[in-house]
Length: 277
Image (cartoon, rainbow, N blue to C red; front, side, top):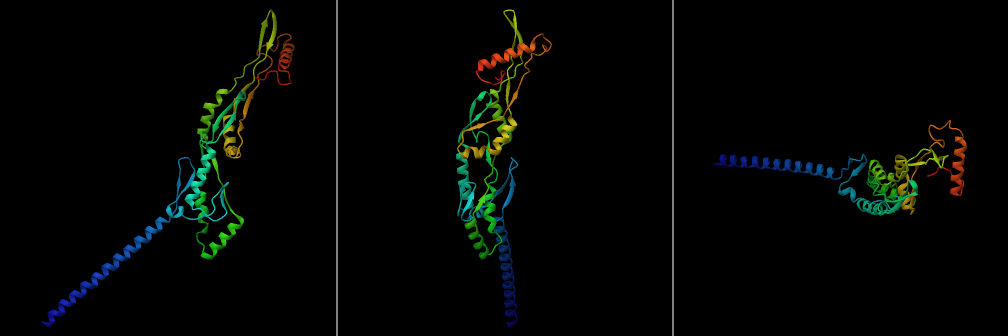
């Protein structure tokens, strides 16, 4: 009887030890999974957008990080805000600027109303806010405190970079501004009442699309935010020859041209070119 009792007790003891080992293994695996999950949550992943603009896609923990005092994104004060709140405030500011209407002066001195949003403006570097928040990373408490005090004194300026989608802006200018271009016409030799005279040609004016977009990309945002209203776009002027084509050897052609230019200047009442449009 005693032998049987000891045998049963030994089996119970072995089962209890096995059970304890299983529990320990489960707890260890659970701890490892918890560590991996936390590491993924605080990770920041860089992604590329279709417009070849690098952005930082942050998770909730980064969005909740607080910026230093005396921090600005361009002209926007984001002192002490979380990354998410700062991003929202800058986006609100940009919406106001992007929707502000101004005018483009094109050929024939026409003025065409437009906004930066119509020219496909976008915020180039929204990831800069998150990067500024991560300046605290890898520092101990004392170092973070010292850095924060330094930032309060000197300030942290995060650049606000804005540009245009080039192809979309070019398409808009071609559709809405190029229609005012002036075609160049050549000079002609005509006869009125049996008397020959020269009819001067017309200067052509063509909007330089690529240079216009370059100027708008470079200074359009500052132009609008500073409250200016008339942006003068670059034009190319094409001047026709004063002497009609094919009549270079016509007797007295130079004199006829001079008479035509003098008449044009007299009609204008100033010293402008006789063949201006």
